[in-house]
Length: 180
Image 1 (cartoon, helix red, strand yellow):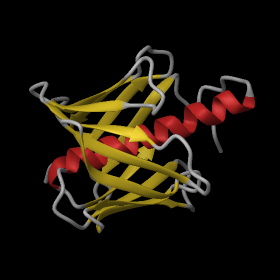
Image 2 (cartoon, helix red, strand yellow):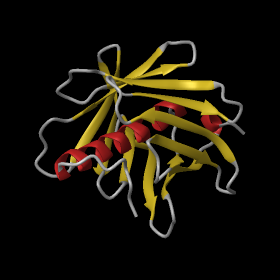
Image 3 (cartoon, helix red, strand yellow):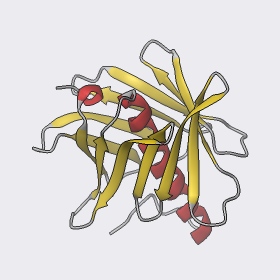
Image 4 (spheres, helix red, strand yellow):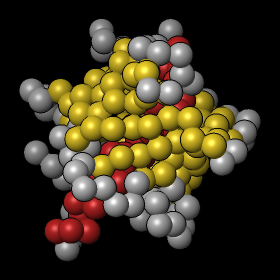
């Protein structure tokens, strides 16, 4: 089964790396694909590849944006949607995904604890949770509704990227994402 057809998978984050790298695996540990991006790249970009290094999708951040926008593109370059971050929220954080200017998905949860859910029209379509007893950062992804898997994969990458860059900027240093 391919990454964009699998409903339950694990996203592992490479800890010691000069760039952002994610491996996607099924629940049995078989590799489904990977994603790569660079820490110092303006605008930030990621490519999601299958096990044969064929691009499934790519993500590109907007250089100047109040909402920390990223657009998801299919392998043919077609725009799948744009994820944006809610600017001001009293408690927690929130993201939304839109296409052609219309919102179609909301993402809620505790992003710093890596626990969040994705909803379409108020119905849950995916949930993400951090696996706590691991050597590498691992996120369990479960897609339970009718949604383009590429949107879920792209959203998880973007949220993780934003969390990492904000932690680095708030600490005043650039630590190349070395976490234990």
